[in-house]
Image 1 (tube, rainbow, N blue to C red):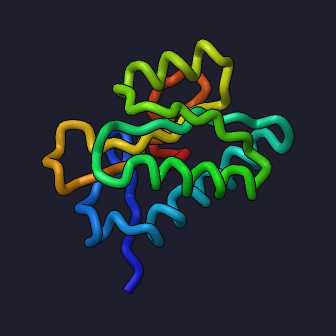
Image 2: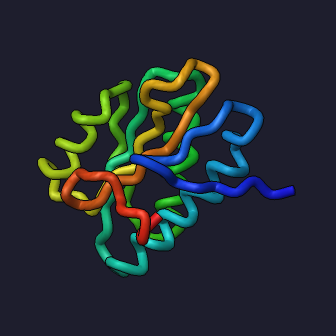
Length: 128
């Protein structure tokens, strides 16, 4: 059975290895990549960042590869960073948005994805 990935307030969060799996992360990031490439077919750039949760670097690498495969240039933040810093970086670099791996305030067994638009704000429900 396929997990329904539903973005709520500022992203999608789930328990690691239950619903937040590599396959589901691939599905979510592929959807984001297709959306961004559809809005900006050439020259799109997305910030890709994370908080310090388990496997964060691996999810960033996975997302970067998917973005590249869809013609979107990933701008990877190598260290863990808080969400406001990633939003600021979107605006500072005039990027087309961001993918941020974080579960925010949720317990450590969770992880999540936030997708931000070019203004650094969370993507609205009609986008997600």
